[in-house]
Every structure is written in C-alpha cells, then in structure tokens.
Image (tube, rainbow, N blue to C red; front, side, top):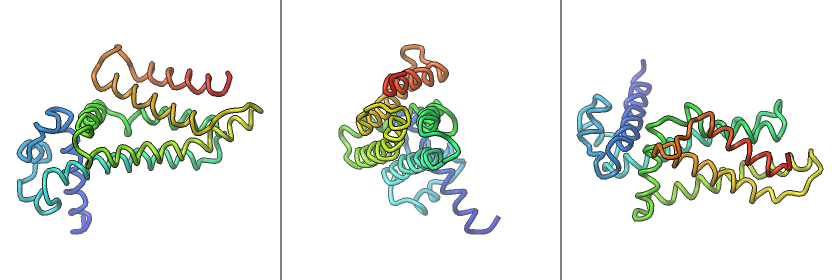
Length: 197
C-alpha cells in the first residue's frame, strides 16, 4: 500500500468510525475517544485529518451522502434499464446495503435531529434532498411519457425522497416493525400509485 493509499485508508476508517459511534451514542456522545477506539486510532490521527470533532462528523455525513448519491446517479445513468426500472432500483438502493445499514440509519436519525439546532448538518441534508429530487424527476417524467400519462414529475420525485426519509426513520428507530423487504414494498406501492398502476 502506498503512503497516499494508507492516508486515504486511515481517513476513511475515521469517517466510518464516526458514523458507527454516532449511531451508538448520538451526536453528543460521539466523543473523540470513542471514535478513536472504534477506528483503532490515536487521538492525534483525528487532528491530523480534521480540525475538530465537528468537522469530522460533518465530513462523515457528507461522505455517506456522496456515496449514496453516487450509487443513485450510477443507476439513473444505466440506460439498459427503463426509466421506471431505474426509479425502482434507486428507491431500493436507499434501503439496501451499502447505502443502508442499521448504523447508517441510526446515525442519519441523530444527524437529522441535530440539524434542527446545527446549520452545519442542515445544509448537506437539504443539498442531498435537492440533488435526489433533480436526479429522479426526469426519470418520473420519462416513465410517465412512456406510459402516456400526466404526472408532476418533480412532486413525484420529492415524494419518493420523503418516503425514503420516513422509511429510514422507522428502520432506525425500530418502530412499526418495518423490515427491508417491507420498505421495498412501500416504495413499489408509491411508484405504482404515481404511475397509475
């Protein structure tokens, strides 16, 4: 492993450890000591890569968003699938590994709660919502056109993102006894409703 690869690996391990620690202990309980223990790293390593615990947590949140949106973008650009199939695959990706895990869902809940009081967390959450809506809306437009139906594609895309958010809330908290299979079925019912299935 080269020195650059080693640096990137250590940084990535800190980002992953931050997500897991937030999932277990919430934002306030995600101390530098706990994050370092999870990453198997010294306190000095965090200071080498990040200005503060807050900058590490923000980087971890943004890294997860970038990963999730990268997966969704890849699906959206897969022209071997119909527009409707791409919408479904994007929805499924939200509740499937590697985008979804218990730790990610719990951390998402913690960051969402903290965003009410911390604008640093609110900004990437808003940006992710806008990006996802812009990514999915053209697919809803194409799917509606393929079926010869009228549809407000932007509203349909925003609704799917809001549904995903609600599914994540249920999955993260364990309420509603929601499983990943049931979450995918909820996505299907929403998409079917939008497309008059």
